[in-house]
Image (cartoon, rainbow, N blue to C red):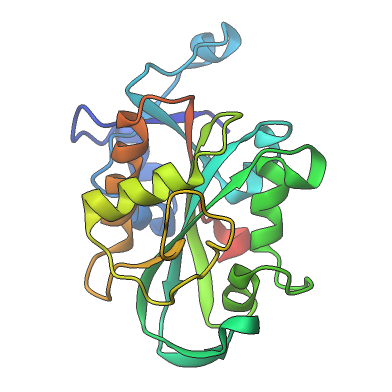
Length: 224
């Protein structure tokens, strides 16, 4: 697969975009998408500072051994009740959520390992997010991340709150070890905002933060 890139500088879609599966086109509509030519690939062309690299979930091993901060974009298609460990029972509303975390280790705790675990349904419920993702009612539509060895999940979460004005659906969700006073690392963006628009907004925020390389993972047929 040829690498793609997203930029926050233009609203342009290349001709190659027309060949993408409908699910992919829907998810990244209105993003700047361009194909990097074979010559650039062989020469190891790196994206410009204003670009993010797009990969599918099936290409997740390309993130092996990389450390960073990530934000999951989660779709809940219908409202349902959910018991979440020590947080008790909550009503999970239909709509779009984000969850922000860090992957700063090696192996199962690098970016590839951590995101792969989030994608698996069959796992021990260890974290608050596991209860939501193992419910059968929520699906990860995209994952955005930037490369860093610093623990910046709270910085990113606070940036999302201040810039995009979501609501807090469940206090203390995923924020027990927060060092910046985050009320929750699960944010709710309602049921009206299209998923692709939210992905674009978060991608721009990641690029504007000026940290390491930015990646966007999007759902493919294998994970549909």
